[in-house]
Image (cartoon, rainbow, N blue to C red; front, side, top):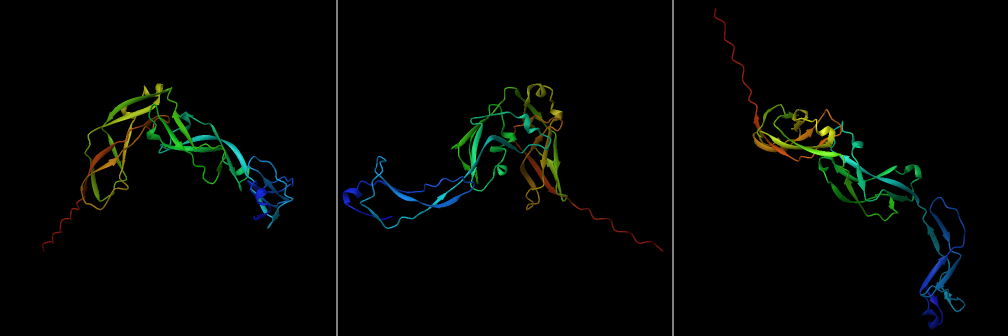
Length: 264
């Protein structure tokens, strides 16, 4: 906006406002034309406009309306076995809730909880604590909550170490023979103290999934991850990040013996 008037008076203007005096109950974003122009000094005092001329007096004001909802923060778990009870895990969060807002969403569209972090199960060791940056995606973060610290409540948990030597190869390509070269592996298991006390190495299953191995070479050895599970229990887990050495050889096809001709 261009304002014309005495220079001494112009120098007093610090801010110009397009003002609407309408009272509206809004349920969505709204455009409204201003009713007047107001001039303010640096300390917020209104300036009398009698000595000024304006090159424009009409402005469109957009009033954004946000629907907002306060939701609890939650933690997601990845890499858990299908039988694992995620609800058995207890966490302490540095913030319990967050207020989300959206221009387009209705209250029914908001989630009941907001997942502040996703943690791989095998990273949840005793004394686990980590900070995560909060990304609210398409929602506006009205709480100005940039991060949250997630701490595992391990007051009723214990750890037990095992040495296992029984490995199971699964999804092996049919045209190869495989053999586990590694003789044994140390495994750490975490769970409720009373449950951990009764676990033995026989309860542990160590699977080696060969489905996605590199098929570009014919033989040799390679390192591969081991997936450790305890099928009998739904509230214990392994925190071991281990690889084993597996050897691979191409299967040989034996030719069938030639048939002998009959004598007359």
